[in-house]
Image (tube, rainbow, N blue to C red; front, side, top):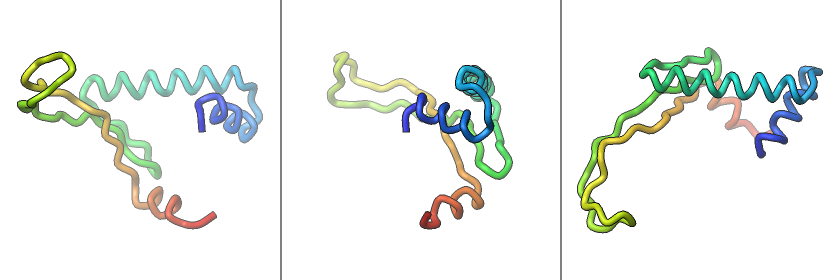
Length: 92
């Protein structure tokens, strides 16, 4: 599902205009990125948590840029709650 479809579905569910839902969506994603960029963990009770996870750099043989190593880097990690995993694991 693309962002546009998701926003339309949420707008139908809550009875708000798509424009309003789109603004809320953008603000929520921006806030999530700010929280994890600071190194904090965002916990959405009943859904899961988001946090920045660091990975150690390592040597490589071939890269597109011609460098011989990958520097330390971070990724966004999501951990679903048990409730979320159980809900998505059930057939619809």
